[in-house]
Length: 54
Image 1 (tube, rainbow, N blue to C red):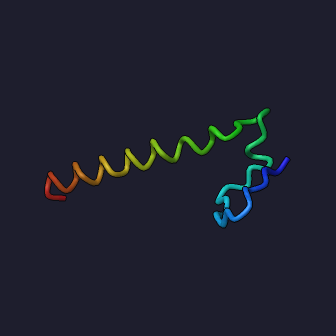
Image 2 (cartoon, rainbow, N blue to C red; image 1 turned 30 degrees about the horizontal axis):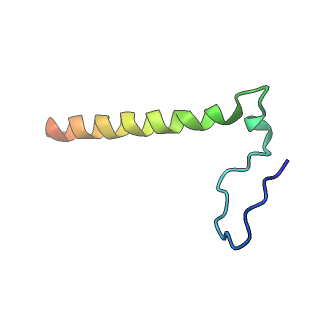
């Protein structure tokens, strides 16, 4: 089931929610949530390494 944009809306959806990976029976869209936490972890690690002079 595709959701149609409002008339005049030129934005593009970067996520193909029709993909099998995002099926509600599997992980649904929560699989995308992991990327947010991972980026925060990478940013924190980089900041700590920089503070340590590495």
